[in-house]
Image (cartoon, rainbow, N blue to C red; front, side, top):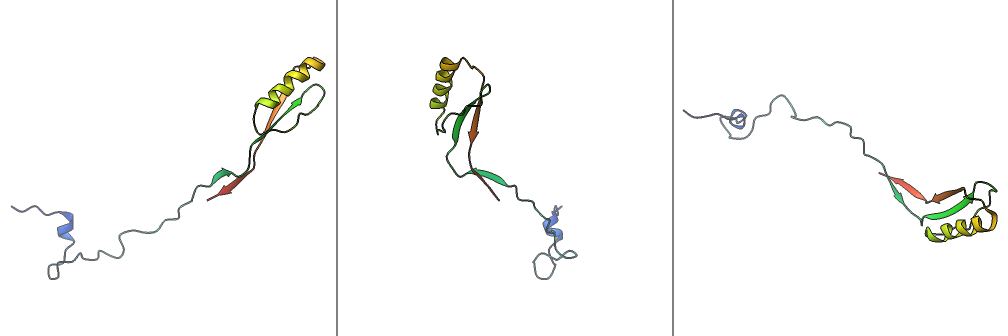
Length: 93
């Protein structure tokens, strides 16, 4: 006894090519492309004293802002700071 597979059932008896079964076998569905963010610039870091609102200079590495905070604390006694990091980004598909 011969087993029939679904591909055998779709074959035409005369030409040996797949038969069309009521139109296309798939439909197009809308696809949402996720958006991504890419950094486009250098990350910059600065520190702000929360007590007197004095701001450090802007650097690209984290070590100089930390050194500024330590020296500011030694000069003024202020010990609460906010670290601000900034970087430009681009949203792409």
